[in-house]
Length: 549
Image (cartoon, rainbow, N blue to C red; front, top):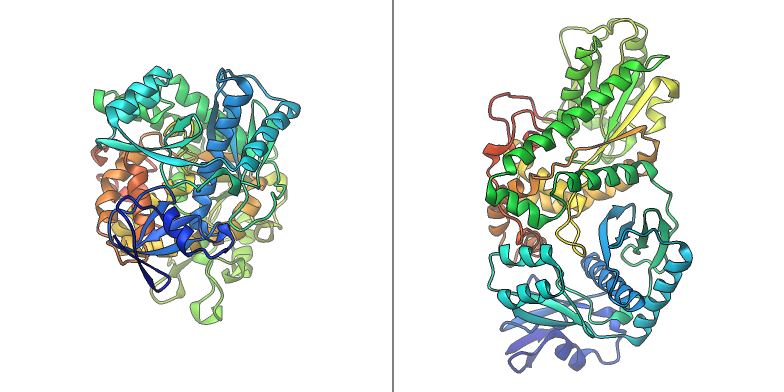
């Protein structure tokens, strides 16, 4: 095979791997300078053979691309340590992200104390010092299924048989074998930074951010933990807490009932929120609704208003998108910063509404970059609330003039209820990215490449302007729907497949395509017209205006 790397050409034998190439070219360089290989957009680990002639670029440990491999390898390390500490009698399940950590539970349900977790951590550190290799094996589906059933892993065996491939690549470290959806690090010696801490009923696996040299202590998020645990319990109650069970529901037709129950849960939560807002004494005068991009804020607010009407409450709705300063006043300021807002106008609007005055509301024209004004003024009824939706709605600098006891702060996010399996979780940010991709194509005239190219910037803005205030929320609404990823797969996979090699976004497109591999597809015809998912995939009967969410 003809391989080029760092401007030089090499002839390698058939079956050669990036590890073989790195051994030739490293020249004593720090091993952390190369932990994955970029083969013209295809990201592979050091143990996966080259498939043909290619140009290779090295991916260092501190890069965002390597961070996912670090996390996958760390989960494998945890699973191996648990197997050795508990003699194979107790396994670890990674449930979901909680802040920068991964929330995990033991298969027997026992609640670990910190002393027990320290023993587990010592075992993990011991394996890291040994530097055990992580190798890759290609296994036929029937052989993989037989192995998993022999190990008593029925859900994993079912999932393997549902995948539209003849063979899969599994990772091996010593006698431990498992499959992970994405490349792994070369060996365990790279996993020097992690921590375990007790968090009943499970524990947290703390993962460093890309390039970090130590674990940063993070603020506890009890409200989010409660919502995740509630979602987890709910999915188990309805008999769908794994991807294999979701695929079975699609194949067997019971997905119709599952969709009805999922949508009914949203309706129930909306009704409870409306009842709580209306039942407060002293009354709630300002309802603040915030959440990251594509969390479903627009549809959530429309549906919440209907439930408030049922209670005889008639709020005025404000979108922070209408309170941007005119573009010619921005001076290069980022649209996602609070300074981009016309804060004085917003404050004046809310105060006048709460005082019962007539107010003419602005409407921001994103084409001209200027505010326009609705013709008809509005007036808030006596003791009625104002609903505010937008990126900065939980920022106290925006709402300081209303007493806290008269506010209800609601945070939205798509907190995924199921995982692929015990060691492969579904990222909440990936769900939102796919939602946004569909919506941008449907309503914004943007290409999938446009959405992918700005996503890092969007995520940075969320870190700075949303996540730092999420703990101010009084309530969290989980906008995720257990059935939505099969719908999004059917709509986005053709878009992603059109992104070809040579495009700098090709690696990310391939990552998402690979992520979708074990999912069944589901037609959007099954999605009810009032679903939050319709905000992104399009409405059939009821036509709502679309806004950034």
